[in-house]
Length: 367
Image (cartoon, rainbow, N blue to C red; front, top):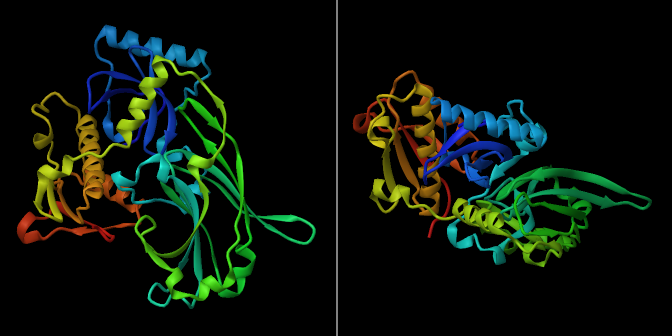
């Protein structure tokens, strides 16, 4: 679902509505509520609505006017277009299970993944930076020469994402085993500010020629040699606020964002499969007064919630029944899945579901 600054939105998971104030990430925005709080919220938990009554129109006008006074960008800003396109092309999501979303487990790491997963000791290696934290980061990677440092890569990496740096041959390994990294944590809503940090990577070249060094990584979703650069809990805090009512509310909302949801469980057929009927009459009691856009947004929001819930609950196969219609819903969900390289999808079994259903296979080792 596309959301832009200035949109009036309604929460799907709780009562209330507000105005989108800022784009935090590809699927997260900051919403100013009617009581003046700004809270980070997943776009999948929102529905864009139009002001209809005079009171609602006045509320929207006042909120937009306040935003202009505060210097908030008033031109439409699509979530998909917020970040540098070159960074977006190289970034993809990590599979993050609820049990792993504990701050003590957060880290920033480098992964060397063999192109040939069956024979990891030969062939080229893909290099990824893994941001296994709940905050966006900016990083730079340098190699040290005799007289100067050379920049190898730099980018903004969103929370719980991996960033593809490059592919190297075995002959190039040496240049990358002693790289130096600088990292800045981008904390959009927090009681603390963390210091920029640096880390020197030092890996023995011999490790790349030991098969035992390449382990099946559940987060990266492939065999890789993982080198932990930074433990998030060890990044120094340089400034801290006492924290008031608004900050407490923000923390509650962030906890809600990363909390496990069990929406998929009511759709389970067996331990590893589920079927979700996305026809609008299955999702709302009365849609007779809704616009096509409102119905589409509700369907897309529910699709994203169920997809994430399937990942959270280790369900490997989900059939989404979307119908035929004009094909817009199928097109939108296909676009969402194309952004996630751990998903495969295809038309579902026609004899069982007809032509208006898509089967999604979530790749990975689930325990």
